[in-house]
Structure formats: structure tokens, C-alpha cells
Amino acid sequence: MTQEELNIRSQFSILYEKIYSKPLIYLDNGATTQKPKRVLDAMQRVYEHLNSNVHRGVHYLSNQCTDLLEEARRVVARHLNAREDAEIIFTRGTTESINLLAFSFGETFCKSGDEIIVTELEHHSNIVPWQMLCQRKGMTLRVIPITDDGELKIEELDNLINDKTKLISLAHVSNVMGTVNPVKEVVAKAHAKNIPVMVDGAQSAPHMSIDVQDLDCDFLVFSGHKVYAPTGSGVLYGKREYLDQMVPYHGGGEMIDKVSFSGTTYNVLPFKFEAGTPDYVATIGLAEAIRFVDEIGFEFIEKHEQHLLQYTLSQLQDHYGVRIIGNPKRRSGVVSFLLGKAHPYDVGMILDKMGVAVRTGHHCAQPLMERLGISGTVRASFGVYNSEEDVDTFIRAVRQAAIMLS
Amino acid sequence: MNTIEDIQSEIVEEFSGFDDWMDKYSILIELGNDMPAYPEEHRTQENIIEGCQSTVWIYADLDADGNVVYQADSDAIIVKGIVGLLLRVLSGHQPQEIINADLHFIDDIGLKENLTPTRSNGLLAMIKQMKYYAMAFDAKRK
Image 1 (tube, each protein chain N blue to C red):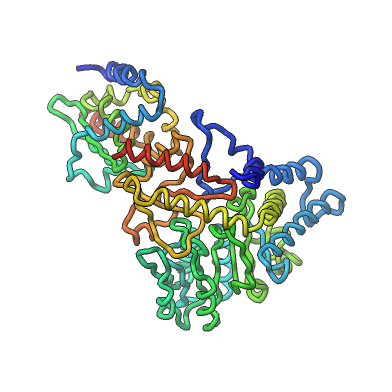
Image 2: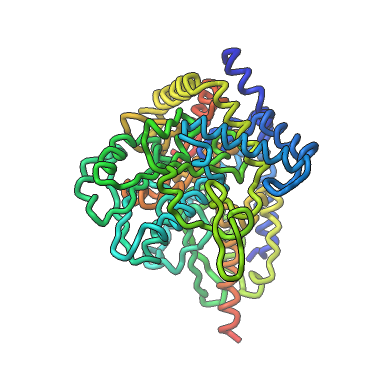
């Protein structure tokens, strides 16, 4: 481990825990990441010194907390290169962001007979909300298929897009295979027909720099907890031209302009979409996590994680009867594999007892599993604090599992 | 015929020499591999135990003496070994004995952590299903 790697890792005390008296090797970052001390400190500071409800108070603490929350919006806006802070809506995470969009976009722009396009490699969170919209409105969900290597058949998009298409919603990075989808190409094709695009950044936000103006996507969502931030923090970025027109999702405090029993008018962006008391403490934590990531810089993060990814692939490939799932040209963050004929759950149980935390199962992507003809995979996913030594221990554990299960 | 209690003591004795989890898993894997083949006609949707990350099938019938005889399978070998232990303990006993059985061996051999309802291996669901079978046979007889 280099000094820089050590400096990063030492900010995460949980990584020094022992599991079944073995050092913890945490390779389940695709599910959630650990939080650096500075994020925990930022939240602790709010509760110990500043806590008060935001946007309401006349008093000192409330103003302090409000300032921190709005500063968080600036931090996220700058991080994503949004045109303005008001295009950043805080949510509880990716799932809530997509549900918000599916409701508010759907109610505003969609009618019976319209179509939404997703892809075959989506997480359930980017399928089910659209299915619910389709059911509500009598619409159709269409699907961009993938190749056996796990890449989008982008040419199929031309056949799927028609004058009923209202939105294309796709993952930036596959949570199962790590496929980096050609978002810019999809956006170009969609915009040529005036169709907006939503990007699910849940699995890309931790691993690569995202510039929403460069991608030119119309919406982008991600979860804080996968980017070293607390659970309960999340983001929906949207272009003002859409957000301004969209009806609110939840009704309640904060999102209103004027309320009377004869009718209510809504607040301006971003507050129109933030009903009720937001999780301002988690969101202040999110801002600190973004600062943490930006200070390290994605140049280092990408290089480091790509190294771990390629090292893992080279160590796994052609060994112990391992079959890597998916073979995308550009891969990020995760490696999924099967070990001979062994059930992923067996592999996961043995790895667990050796202190190695991975995820097994269908990864909330059952349509993709069906497409690949498998019931699940073992998935190792990386974070900025993982090291080559982590990979070595993981490989030793895989070897042990292979021996036991062969 | 050994009682459910006798068999549990046997299993606890067999596992007592192994502190290491890898050894325990090795026994379970061996057990799983040694299980008799599960009859294909019972590999049906209705015999699948819900709540497992792997697929578990359990089927039960009564023998001539009125004992419940279980058959089971799983596509995950360690889980198959665990369900194999359950079969060894419960299979071949009278419904009332099965209904009243206190399966303390699970705790004794260190498998208790697998017993909480939220665990993805569904051990609790398996035990529940096996006891349901016993209750159904018991009710039918009355």
C-alpha cells in the first residue's frame, strides 16, 4: 500500500475491524460504501452544535443549518457541473429519485399509449417505477437489449424510438457487470428526436467524474450512501426546463407557496420537490463526502480502482473454474463471476467466514439474470480504500472456496 | 430407533471437535453431497421454501408406521447440508414428536446465527415448513 492509499484507508476505522477474528476485507461497495471520519464528524457536529429545522426558523441555529444544507446543494451542483444549484433536488437515494421522476414526469408529460425505454441490464429500481407509471397510464415499457458480452445493442435504439417515446432511462454503469454504457451516444440519438434521457448514476457516481452538461442528460440520479455519504441522502439532478414544468411528487410543508382550502400554489425549484423536513443532517454529510472524493480527485480514484479491477480479473480469469460474467469493453467498479458449478450463495458463505464481504444473488437485476441464463452471481465491488492486498486475500478465499466446493 | 434428542446429541458430538468454520462447512458440504437423490416428481413450485437465496425443496410423506419421512434438496450445497441435518434429526419420527421438538442442536453447533428470519438462507422457513407437514399429518390422523 502506498502512503496515499494508506492516508485514505486510515480515515475508515471500520476497515480495521475483525470478522470471525479475521481482518475485514470489504468488497461490497456496490451495495454501500463505508464513511470516512470527516463525514461522521460533520454530522456529529450538526447534532452537537447546530441542529435545528431548516428553512423555517427565525433563529440562529435554524439559519446555520439552512446555510449548511444550501451549501451542500452548491457542493453537489459544482460536483456535477449543473448550470444552477436549483437543479439539484435532494432525495433519500436513487430509488426515491427515480420514483419521484416517474411520478412527476409521468403526470406532467405522459398519457395512455406513450412509451418509456429502459435497458435489459437495469437494476429493479430503474424498471419497477416505470412499470408502475405504465400501469397507471396505460403506457408501454420498451427495452434496449444487450449482447452476450453485456453491452447495449445501441443500434436497436433506432427501432425502439418512435413518436410515442417520452423518456429513455438507463444505467450509467451496470451494477452486475460493470458495463459503462455509452450515455452520450444515447443522449445524442434521443435528443435528435427531442426525447429526454435519465441517467441512473448509482454505480457511476462513486467511480468516475460526472459532468451533466457534458453528458447533456436531462436527469441524473445517484445515492449518497454509495459515494461515502450517509444513508438517506440522494440526488436528483434535472434540467430546469423540465423540472419547472413538472408537478410535485409529495405534498406537504416546504414545497408550498400558499395554501388555502380552495387551492395551493407551489414553491419554486428546488423546494417544490422537497416536501417535509429533509434529511438535512445526512445531506450535510453528503456534501462532506463529495468534498472528500473531490479532494482525492477522480483521476486518482479511476486509476486506482481500474488497477484493482484489472488485477482482480487477471487473478480470477482462467483459475479455479471461474467464469467472469460480462465482457464489456469499458468496465467500472464491479466484477461478477461464477465458480465452476458452485451456487453463488455457497461461495459467499465461505468467503464471509474468511472475512471477505461480497454480494451474492441476482443483485436486483432479475431480467438481466434471465437474459444471461443464470440465477445469480458472486460480485466483488471496489471502493477508493481497497488495496491490492485486499484483492490478494479475496483471491485466496476464492481458491479456498473452489477447493471446498469442487 | 433413536429419539430426536439422541440424534441431536450425536450431531453436537460430531461437530464438537471443529472450532473452525471451514471444517464445519466441509462437514456440511459432505453431508449435502451424500444426500439421497431428491425425487424429480416432487421438484415442484409448491414444494419450494420461500425466503432462501438458494432454492430449497422439501417434501414429506408418512411411512407404514405413521412416521413422517422427509425428502429435501437445495441447489446450494452448504444449504443442502444444513437441510440434511434437519432431515437426519426429524425424519422418521411421529408427527407429535416433530411438532414438539426443540431443535437446540442448531445453537449448539454454532448455526444459530443462520436462524434469524431475515437471514437469506431460510433455515427458519425450512423448520417451519417441516413442522407444518407434521401438524398436517397429525391433524389428518385425528
